[in-house]
Image (cartoon, rainbow, N blue to C red):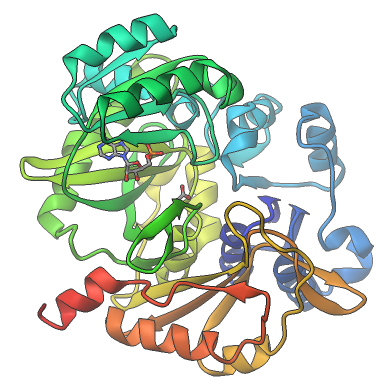
Length: 443
Ligand code: AMP
Ligand code: GLY
């Protein structure tokens, strides 16, 4: 099978690494990829003795993902059997749908189904129709309507830009004045198109956890649990980021709670999407709040989490290429359920100093080999090769990932590896997994 992987982050390096382990993965291509993915591809294509046939294009290459006809043309020329779309932007832009319409198998939802991530208001309305537990809400398309609606909410209150805002479109307002300011900001265009509509939400309290499921539009199977750390600083302080680390599984999601999530949230979503003519195919990533009355949906993502994907891939024992193809073909019912190792995987993000506001680019990175010999797996995110040297080329740069018998052991292994890496202009949190480590210590 020839697979094209779209994306360039740590998530995509982890997907590439796992896809390459599949006996049915013949050649692997990545657009645009990164130096870590390039290494995986050189290995897999070399192993199959395909390097001559593929040439330089067999490594990572760039093409305009907004040009759907161009992507389809590439898939036809190079006999691509399956396209795996990593990030949300091409999904919300309808790339998966265009490929599917051209009879190319693709892992990722159509444009209408990707609204589950692309529009918070869409998801809230779906929850209302399908009776899915979630925070009470109001949608508003003008500042005046939004300000008037505030009267119906207690403080704190949550103000969200409706569209994709790279994780920055959510304000938890601790006072009425802050809520009003957030509403004015959003309608003043500080979030661009994403803020043309806002969702005002009741503030939920509890512990957050992530639940994953893969679905072919009809059949749906659980695909693991994780918890991440969104804030930049130790102790969960400072600005929000794309995620500074994660671990899987999240034992706080007990087997009983996972069953409730499947029954009360995931299955009703899949069934309602199908019944309404917009079946959802791909991975559903549910951000949950575990409240006193049970799990409630905070948000959906139409793709794997980054860095949650890295810890899921470390634990996945099943053939990822087979599972993704079965999802794309609508054959999940005929495929064995995904199996995960019982161990804990934990990943520490090494970011460039200044992240998230102004990450410093170009910093040298050395000794990754030594770190991997400490028993960790390193996934590249924002790295680049310049004159044969590896340098930082983005905010989140590396994902140092380890498996252990529990979170305490996985954390120790991951930080041991971090300490081998020479990345002067980088930093990381030192407390990834703290909740679980504290629970394991009986605190
Ligand atoms: P989202 O982008 O919707 O996941 O929101 C980002 C973060 O804001 C979440 O991970 C939560 O920590 C927080 N959040 C979002 N909605 C709520 C809510 N209704 N109640 C409490 N916290 C929330
Ligand atoms: N780490 C959170 C996300 O990928 O949305």
